[in-house]
Structure formats: C-alpha cells, structure tokens
Length: 556
Image (cartoon, rainbow, N blue to C red):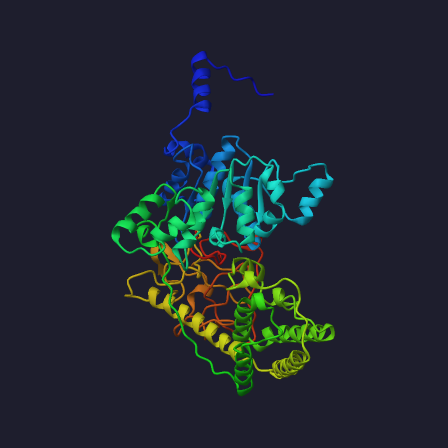
C-alpha cells in the first residue's frame, strides 16, 4: 500500500484553491481543464465559439453557425465537457437519427464523455428497470428529432443544464403552424439553455432566421408581424445593420476563408460525366413527368401533392428501379380506393423506404392551402370513379415499363465517372510528386521501408537508390526469399514490367508497384510471370531499414 502523501497547510490551501477557483465566463482559462484532457487538435475559432456560448450566465443560448467542415461538433463537445466538469450533468443532444452513433463515438473518443442513445427499445427497457423518466441518466442523452417529439412530456419534466440541437436548420419553420416537430421541441425545452448547431442559418427566407432565433429567445425580435414588417425585406443599410446588431449576442458564424491561415483544405475538382438515357428510359421519364403535371390526380393525397410529386421526381431521376416499387404501390392504393369508392387518404406505402427523409421533409413542408383541405374522405361520383380507373390503368403501364427496363444508363456511366475520378486523382498525385513539380514526389499512401517508418518522400527510382531524409526504397523480394537488407541482391536488380494490381497504374519503365493489402503499402517488387506476392509474419521481418511498412496515408 502506497504511503499517504503529507501536505503542508500551504499546499493543502493551494490545491483547494485550484480545485474550486472560478473564472470569467468568457475566459479561456474556464476551459483549461477540459482542453487538457481533450483528444482533439483544437483550432482558435472552435475555442472562441465555445467561449461565445458561455459568455453570459444569463444567456438563454446561442446559435453556432460555422460553415460546413469547421468543427461544430467539436465546439459542442467542449461545451458538454465543461458542463460535465462543473457537475451540471443533465445534458441532452437532439440530432438526426443517422448521426447518433457518430456523436456517441466522438464524445467517448475525444472527450471521454459517456453517452446513451435513447430510442424506443432502450427507453422502454429503462422504464421496465424502474427509471420512470429514462431521460434522467448519469450520461449525456442522445435522441432523434422524431423521438424527442413523441416523448415531449418526459423532456419537460427534466431540468436540463444544456441542450444541444444539431442540424438545427430543420427547425427553421417553427414559426409556422404546420411544423409539428419543431413546435413540440421548442415548447418542451423553452425554459432551458440551448445551443443550436447549423451550417446554413437560413436557406430561402429571412423568416427562417426568425424561427431559429425564437427557439433561443422568443423576445429577441418581438412578434412575427413586427419582424416581417421590419426585416423580411431589407430595403436599406440601416435595417441590415440593426438586424446584424440584434444577432450579434445570439449567433456566431465563422466562414472558411477566415480560417485559411491555420486550416488547410484539400482542393476539390468537379468532373462532369454526361449520359444519354435509352429510348425506354426516356419514354418512362416523359410519361411520368406528363402524368405529374395533370391538374387532377387520384393517386396522390391532395394535401401532400407537391411534396410527393417532388419525391417522385427525385426517384425518377435516380433510376427506373427506384421508382418501380412506388408506382406499384400507387396502383394498389387506387385499387383499394376504387373498391371503397373513396379518395386516397395516405401516401404510397413504400414511399418512406424509397425516400428515407420523407418524415423530416413532410414535417417541414408547407403545402399551400393545406389547412383548407377537409379531413373527411371524399366519396367519388361515377364519372370520377371512371377517371380513377383510367389513371390506374396508366400507372400499371408505367410500372410494367419500369420493370421491363434492364439497362441502367446512369448507373453504367457512374462507373465510368468513378474510373475517371480515380485516374485524375492518381495523375494529380503523380504530377505533384514528379521531379521539378515543386513538391514531394510520391503519394502519401506509398511507403518506404526505413527505421523511422515514415511515408515515402519520392517515387522509387532505381531500387536501392537513396530517398529524401536518408530513406531508401523498400522492394519486396521474390516469393522464395525473405525481405532483404540494403545490400541484398534483391535490391540490386531492376524490377521487371509493372504489376499495378487491380486498378493500379504502371510506373515508369524499370519501376513496379504492387497493389496494397493488409500489411503492405505500395511497394516496388519484381513482376515475375506466374508468381504471387509473398506474405510474411511480423516475426519474420528483419530489423534492418528495409522492413516493408504498412500502407497508410499521411502518417509516420
């Protein structure tokens, strides 16, 4: 047992002070302990955003609207970690369902914060275990937008210390009566501090900005009518300046061009690959497009016609296979409606499967005149029933045509586009690494054997020649030999013809590269007819500087 540590009164007082001292809410020292433990390379704008959200203890929240790719998740992680360190541990993150596991993993790996994902199964299991409000956990709670809406009463009963809402632009239409998810979340979390993460604070209208700000503070802009009359159309610099001034204490937005000094971005190049649909594909497209443009359609619910039409056009542009099942479901709906002589009351059954964002899009969709649609189902007249049956016959024809199309022109050309993209990337890497190009001469995925196991700084010239930083090109032996040292005859010869492997590209004459596998990077080796690449256990590798290294990008 280790002996007890003896502390003087002075040291005890000093340690007590360090453990209990407080800092100003906008001081970076407030985050010092959290920053010391975080396993992430922080950038200045991320620390500034976290301090912005903490700037006032009386603040109701903040909107962090950094441009895409600037690390809003890290900023939120700092806030959650600080609250956790202060033992304020009623923490909730509301986010899209497909991001729940990613958030949980990042909180664990980068901030050592335990989280729990609440969904129907875990929620019911927690209740059976005796926790009558599963949102009250000794961990950060993660849940989806839809789940938060369905469990609104439980959200109200928990005194949250901080609520983080990711992809918060999904709530931008909260000021409309039709946005049910947004309204439920806003009402349930009204008394609690919130941080909204959103890359685009608005998309189509300045009214969306009003909606987001109202989630934080209902009185920041007054009522909707006042905001609309003053800011909906910014007619002069005075109105624009006042809008910015009112947003200053609530919203912080960092753009990419503001961080270029310390964040280096990969250049992106767009390649356009044209394709020509077959005659059958074009015919199906024209038939379905003409059908969707009609004034009266019995297969689509009147109150959601624009929404479903949008989704059907997206499916049609995707592939004939994507829309085939939906067309069949529409036929079945019309059959049931004809049998009951009543109007269709719901969208096609498999539309949510064909378009995974249907629920979210439907909640945000503002259908013109939707409120005026009567709720009871309409009975058909004989003339309407005859029109319905004609429409059903046309949809059967569309479905049969979609199923008969075997060739997918877009899918085939997509493969061509991918090959072009990989070829262009390989060419760009080679050009960047070629002599006289002004940069390192090999892609970072190609590796050289060296004591330091660092990435190759140059394309292998003749085997055995020196590389930058005293590195030498590693060359795997023939199948019958083990990896050889620098003076080995296996390093002395010139490799035979290129063996680039699947999708690989040949090197210049006299150089060969093998395709990477689990233990080998892009490595020079002689291409012998009929031979196969050797495999070696790590225990059989020599300790010399020619040890083959694992292929890995950009690391040492």
